[in-house]
Length: 108
Length: 114
Image 1 (tube, each protein chain N blue to C red):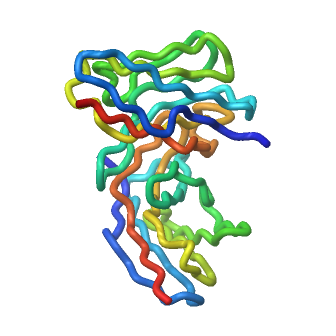
Image 2 (image 1 turned 30 degrees about the vertical axis):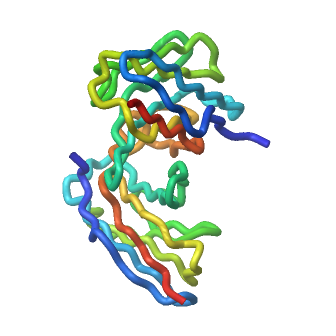
C-alpha cells in the first residue's frame, strides 16, 4: 500500500498555478519526498524531490512542511500539457511505492 | 542521447507462451527495476537489480523472471505461470537503489495475452 495520501483528481485553469497536496504522515527521517507524473500511456517522469528544505527546478517547486508530514507540488503556470497523473512518494530506490496519484486536468 | 529503451511497444501472445520484454539503458546506472501497471492503478514492483548479476524480488514476482548479465540490460520474462499477464510493463533505472536517487523510466511495453 502507498504510504502517501493524495486527492484522486483536481482541476486547474490554464496559466494558473496548480497546487497538488500530499500527506505522508509516516515518513521516516531519512526518506525523501519524490514527485513523478505520468502522461497517458507513457512512462512516469521524475519531477522533483526533497528531504527537508523547499526545492525548485525548471519544472516545479516543492514545499515540505516543517514536520515533514505533508508537502505541496506547485506548477507555477499550468499548461494543457501538464494534464497527467501526479504521484507523491515518500521514499526512493527499491522502496519506491506508486499509489493511485492525483489526476490533474488543466482546462483552457 | 541518454535514456531507457523498451521494446516492443505493443506485444501480443497466446496464453501458455513465455514472452521476454527488453529493457536497455545507456545512463550508466547501477540499479534497474521492472514495474507492472494495470488500468487506473499505480505501479507495482516486480523485480529490481542493484548491480550486475544480482536481482531481488519485488512485491509481485510470482510468474516472472529476470536476468542482469550486463549493466545496461535487464530483460523480463513473463512466464506461463503468471495468471494475469495482460498489463503495461515499465522498466526504470537509477544511479543507485538507495533512497536518495530518482528513477528514470522507459516508454513501456503493453502486453496482451489471449
